[in-house]
Image 1 (cartoon, rainbow, N blue to C red):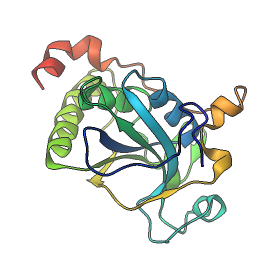
Image 2: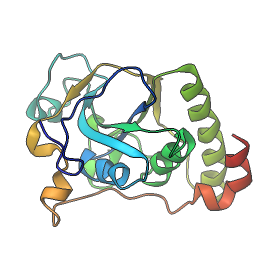
Image 3: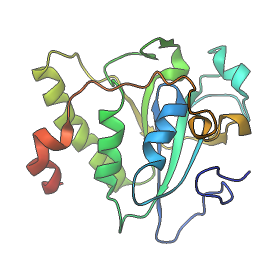
Image 4: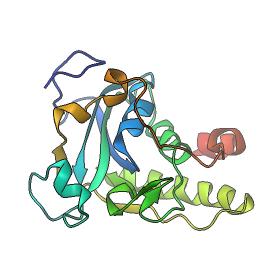
Length: 193
């Protein structure tokens, strides 16, 4: 499978200089676009993670019976973009206080999720969660309900879902954030991380 934006095979090599991240932010079409637009991101792919079924398909995941989340997998160069910046994109571009939904997309497959590959990623994820929660509460939002776990097995979604909004620019995207800017409001705290 060839990536529509980066024009290379959708495969995520282990080791080396690049790092990986996996997030659930609701419908994976808009989430993937947010990440492929970032300078320093080398590859993205959408798929399913966090459930009990091996090699699920979209129809199965939509039943809610597989336990999977619609996720985006990101390969990035930490020399060009920090994991903190990757996390900022995650937190700001969906509502992490909504349980099992994002806007009109309702179901466990649309849950907020952040899955870490290392202890350093886990630490940074938890630190930014605390910082963002403070801002959300000041703005009248509830508690963050994001599922935070060690990276589960990732299953690549069907080809027609990959880079969907690049192939279908008028396609549906229910992705929306809270309007709370983590960088603007906590720039000093972010730099300290």
